[in-house]
Length: 330
Image (cartoon, rainbow, N blue to C red; front, side, top):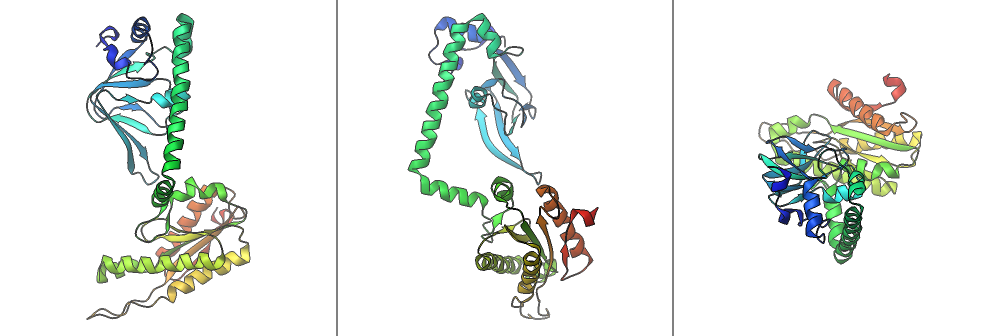
């Protein structure tokens, strides 16, 4: 499809062009392009500057984020007639997600390839001024709408925020909270304690997933109570049965004692009773701990180093407590 064949009604769907005269719409069309995007091809990538926006003539586009564990989280899906990336384009922002074609898709691209608003402003300054004014009005209107929505639904927004970060099985905070919230609240020194229950696969294999779930709930209660008694901290579930706490303003002696206390608390859990031919199952945990910034000045490096130390210790035996530091790991 050539630019001349673009339906003006599709162009007017954009708030940026909604009040332009017909001759100005014709100009927009003349400096737009069409893009044929095969199935599974990317429209844009996370981190790419939004130098264009798109109107979907036909097909289907999905926008998604890639999680740290390699999984994908779908954020939006667009079908024929939808506008994609308009707000990012107006803000001159970078995309915070990827977009790919779920079907063979045909899109209008504005400005067309090889053009920018600045280059168009040299050709028709009055029209570009109108577009920029519309952009300001669009941003202002959306900010007001979002603010109004938040104020009208404050309790719902708080609940949604909590659910986004809370592990439904244990009530512990999810690991994603670290990147989104906790990293900005760290005070030197901060202690990270990770623990992994020993022989947990044996418990699940012999007693079933229900027994494993019940054990994780009891372990979660220990972590929550620990933080309450400590007066601060975040109890977290990192992965399947790997949990722990992050504690601000925690010096070396306190950190070392805290790691030992958590190990004792897990070992003191009431055993799972013997059943038929199955013996009593007692609990223990392997623990790894480290302090930021003393043991490693880079938080992400400290986190990964502590996790690696935990797994290494867990693989070599039970009931171990290890202290990670970048210097000793090198």
